[in-house]
Length: 365
Image (cartoon, rainbow, N blue to C red):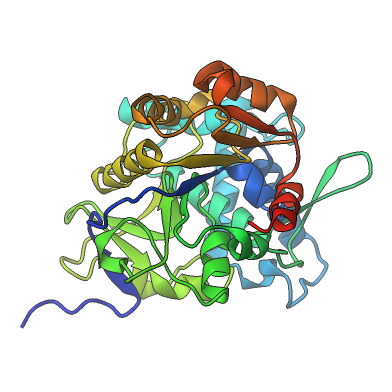
């Protein structure tokens, strides 16, 4: 008798679905940020609020995300700040001078690869950082005051902008995203539609393509099988999955790992199965008859994505003048796309995601 797959896991391989001519929507952190999802440079500050909220003597409201955190979760989150204090602040954490998250993860990756004492052998800094990011993104909403100063709330649910997005985009649209969160997938399901991840195990007869270049909160990877599994139940709520059934591979019992390419200036390892997803993204951009890039600043740390965009666009003969819509309220981001993709291809949308959706709604498309 063969191995039985856990009902919460679905095995996935490289999808064989043919990429058709379609409009590609490339979504960055700025798109999810309009729902209150913290940006990478806000993760550490928001994580501190988790610890401060639970260390205070005030009872945590049952409606708050913090009420669902386990002692193990808190231990992992706390260990990140203990490590930052030791490495960057001479022993004691200085909360007013937190280093950038991409620098932290990059230094940790280098230290691990060189077996440096910067990261103790008995401490998995990568696991701790992933846990921190998962809980901050899943439970926190960023709220800005009139002066633009952020605060971090763990009791308010997201207003999902992708619900309006799914209502207006083309039926055969292809989504490429760098985000780990599941807001887009939930919006698609709530609209009564289907999607696939570019992984063979979840190809529906029809539906949207959701290509996640940096991985996803509901993906797990087995290094022995070289397979990615999808945790289907995770679309039902906002919390990361920590089910015992999601920790081991149903084929060989190996430990499953989160599938997340970190916000790091040094990206040493890319899971081989995830490279297939990148190939699919390249093909989608190469075949696209239009592209909209929303809330993605194309940071220097994402040099691989810059290469992917530039190379695929060199092969794309369908997109002509103004065929790439860049939606971003920051003029410097739009200028960056002009510099790297060519000003003749760029249609400027210097606005928020919500404003872009309103324009599309008024156009009736």
